[in-house]
Image 1 (cartoon, helix red, strand yellow):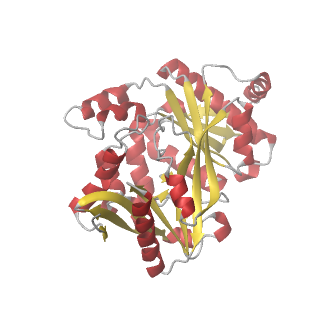
Image 2 (tube, one colour):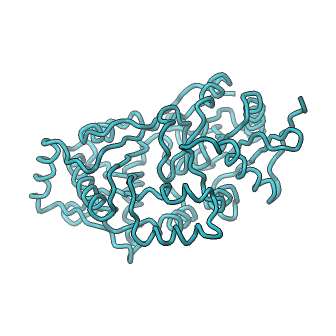
Image 3 (cartoon, helix red, strand yellow):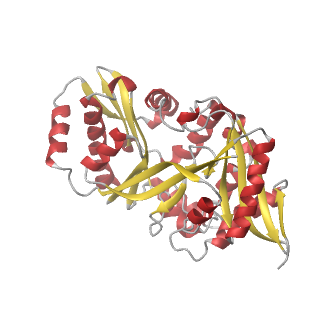
Length: 383
């Protein structure tokens, strides 16, 4: 067998090869959703990804007989280095991700290369897979292979779990997603809680106004930074990242799918729901041209989807231990559930990811009769 060579990604051609590999490895997987290649290239190009304003990365390609047979990224988030280790990252902690390989031997060699780069940078511990920001696609899929991922979620081969664990990595955190039939009304107890909230004149659940996008985004980010500040892995979005997120998400932001809860006129909670863009892009096989762009633009005019995804929800810390936190969550969920069914034809909702130790959010998901459909696992190893 020809010798395996592993080299850093240095050129535009290398980056293209890095993006192209999964299209070959997953071509026979009916549940994989090919990303738009332009988006995938933007993720790994420092000039196009605001995350690089506080992070550095090195990508690697594995080749045999000149053929690309594997890939991996190694990266360090400088903001993550500043957090306490018990909150996920911490001093000396690097990450790896964007991992794909034809076989375990190739993966093992790629992982050793990524770890070597991290050690050269002074790191003593690695988390993975994290691809590449915690806000993008963290964790390895370990449950739910027979269902396509929703927008901004990952999909992996089942054998990757064994490869990672045999390389000496142990699980550190699970990220859970829940699914539910949103055509069905919620259980009687939840409905009573919602009615009680509706009767409370100090509570207002309002739609966002997309015409005031930056102002509304500022309100949501302020709540998010407060609500999530103690969460495992939480790194506040920086201004360059906020700008990037705005550009990417604005086309799939719809007023009635994002709600802000106000208490006595003060914004205290929010819920973001996105129509599953993956349903529109899956048939495009990664290419917007020659006709894919027109199909996506037409879809964006008024999406008709099966699934709605809730990627983010937050309640200010001052309310998190109160009954009001759950009540506000149920009220926002119900308002968006009705809009999703009535205006977009959706039948299914997906909530997540949710940290496995987030008791409040996991309890809310259980109370509305949702069930776990996918689990993603983050691993760690000390060098």
